[in-house]
Amino acid sequence: MSEIFAEQTAPTEPEGPLAILKKGLHNRSFVIGAAITLVVIAMALISFFWTPYPFDGIEIANRLKTPNADHWLGTDHFGRDVLSMIMVGARNSIGVAIIAVGIGIGIGVPAGTWAAARGGWIDETLMRVNDFVFAFPALLSAVMITAIFGPGAVNAMIAIGIFNIPVFARVARGAALALWQREFILAARVAGKGPVHITVEHILPNILNLLIVQGTIQFSLGILAEAGLSYLGLGTQPPNPSWGKMLAEAQTMIAIAPHLAIFPGLAIVTAVLGLNLLGDGLRDIFDPRLRRLK
Amino acid sequence: MFVYALRRIAMLVATLAVATVVIFAVMEVLPGDPAALILGVEAREDTLNALREQMGLNRPLHVRYLSWVTGLLTGDLGTSYTYSVPVSDLINERIGVTLPLALIALTLSTLISIPLGVLAAARHNRVADVGIMATTQLGIAIPNFWFALLLVWMFAITLRLVPSGGFPGWDAGLIPCLQALILPAVALALPQASILTRIMRSSLLDTLHDDYVRTARAKGLSQRIALWSHAVPNALIPVLTIMGLQFSFLLTGTIIIENVFFLPGIGRLIFQAITQRDLIVVESLIVVLVAAVIIVNFLVDLAYGVVDPRLRSRG
Image 1 (cartoon, each protein chain N blue to C red):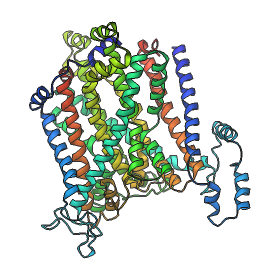
Image 2 (image 1 turned 60 degrees about the vertical axis):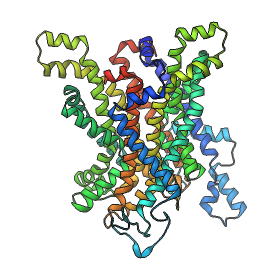
Image 3 (image 1 turned 135 degrees about the horizontal axis):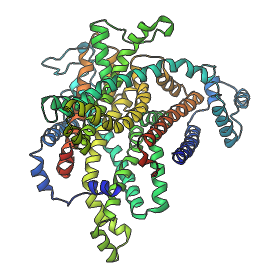
Image 4 (image 1 turned 30 degrees about the vertical axis):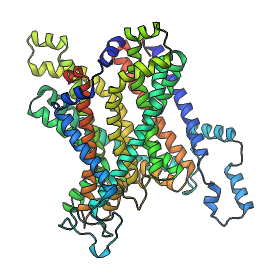
């Protein structure tokens, strides 16, 4: 049973980026997801150089304006331009999610591949620790961590990142274990290569696809988690705008200014939806067998 | 089955024991002296010391851990610093909001997702399937607290059908309570229902290709009967596991959702306790929630062993 499963998840031959891109253009999820993700990333990058107004430019005379020609998405209760805040908020969301995924990959992948390479009690111990972290409700623990070490974007990254570690460890271990059974790894061992050598030269390039797909999924979960923490006041702190914080502020004014609650929410949904579609598309492209099952 | 259950129980106890150590250790590094917090910044050192002595904060670490765990086992969860009432009383009071909320959300999510998942699988690659799949993509991408805000705006503020927040208490009668819980439950259920629909669909698509379904059709059963009495029951097994997992998402999801709707439940209590540095409440609540999650997962595991004998030998 486990052999069958391993065979199914064992990565196929690695392909060049060009071949993947060519296949990608025929995949609807990939094209739509990549387009949306690029727009969101572009928005975040542009915000470093230009926003329609300064994101913290308070202009009380212009407060709570509905969308108009000057302020495309309206203004908030301090007269700040909502579009500018959303653009800078994209920067925060993406930054937190990227670092959180980085923490997961940086610790989880070495741990998972090490467990697969060594087996025995090391594997057993690492996997039990993994199960244990999984048993903790992630949101609850993230709230606890940010509350203990103080609210802020950096602590939010760490809190979200910690829960990415077991995810990547599990994916890396599962895929690596399957590869360790294959002939070309056996050949490498016969040639005298050690476990570290084999992992870096043969295992990692072959599990890269799976890691990219998982990374995309964790990226979108990270954006949702950052928004949730910021909504509770535990994530990105003012005056830096963040989508979650904007929604928390909008809540008290929803009866008089519903537009304040709509646009930051749409921004979150767009970013998450784009990444999820991108992840689905990438999975189909990398592993056509899964697509048939779908 | 007996050995399987014993091994699972041993794992359960070990996990719970490690959990209490980790939670205790994490709470110990928390900055802030509870005694100083209660007495204020201007308290004299000897008063502070007296209070620390009274609260048992001067005892060695392992003694405090042991007395805390013994307390947990006997149902004595300590006394809240800020409310000055036993934590177990606080939990008893608040669970009456959180548990019904989570259960309504779980029921909603199941009632929506199973029929939708079956419909999508039965109409694989046709309009209904594509439509349902697109909707679930959206459902997963929507943060539940934003969905909650939109629901409040629509049903509480614009249409004035239900209150926008707060909880009247069960003394006020069933209807007002359900009115207060319905929007939060819908908001909690949306992402879970989307995930469950997708899992129901893919699980059913897998079983639809199995031999026994073909046999059922070959012996003359209609498509509908083959689907509902042969394929669906088998496809439900993975769905049950996910439902077990979702219970923990629903419980912790209440931290955010109860804050959106100002519901006096466990989620809001834990959030308030953290901001007020009411350590004993935080500690006990987290243990209770983690224990609930671990025990639910354990029950799902056990149920799995009953349903599928092959799993017992693996452990």
